[in-house]
Image 1 (cartoon, rainbow, N blue to C red):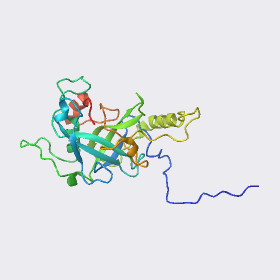
Image 2 (image 1 turned 90 degrees about the horizontal axis):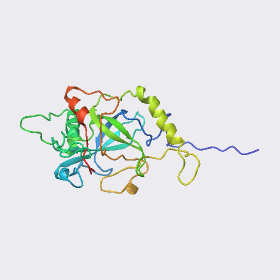
Image 3 (image 1 turned 60 degrees about the vertical axis):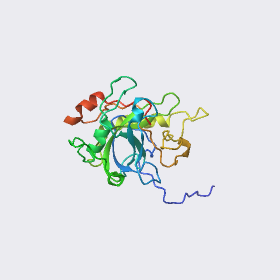
Amino acid sequence: MTDDFVIPFNNTVVAEGGGGSGALFPSGWKVLATVLPTTKDGTSITKRPYAREGVNAAITCLGVRFRIADGQKGQGRNLFADVPLARNLKSTGNGKFPDGTPAYFFFQFFRSLGYNVDAPEGFKLPADQELMGKEVELVLNYEAASNGNEARNVVGFINKAAGIPNNTALQAAADKLAAEARNAPAAGGGQPAQQAAAPTGWTPGTTPAAQPAQAPVQAPPAAAGPPPGWTPNASDVQAAQQQAQPVGSF
């Protein structure tokens, strides 16, 4: 006969079927997210070169951090996107567009927040405090593991917020990704992992090792394209056909 073993209740609560903040989603999965300061303890949105080197290094961008809003799978997760402060990029798409493309994230981000980016007098950048706390809808892309990097989600498109999105059509694909993660071999052994590892994160100005374990952070996309499930409006049709990100972007 053994004594009863009781695990005391505390403030740690995980929603049923939530998959944890590190769960991966298929391309086209939509989330409602909030604009936050670039760094966890910061009070501003970082401005820095759009690329480490090359023709796009002269372009300034906003390193925008988004937090997936509560009430959704992945709630609390951080995602990043570089928003160019320019209407055009130069060579993009790993050389696929040597003459460059429109800076689609510039148009998507500011239009989603209700700004007129086409004013004849030009676009005046809003203050950081005006941007932070506002909500947008993010359409995610799924990037499979490659070159030693773990699979991850990146921001594919930025749309106007319209409440918590309905991802029912992609739930089967999400369940498949979750099952693959559960059955993946554990590091250093042949047994299945007990829990999917959080995707490798990125925080501007730090190394991945310095990131908070409880808030996995996603890197901005090296290349973005129209994911399944994205519904373009008339002004975004061309963007959906040509979307590309530059070589070497942060």
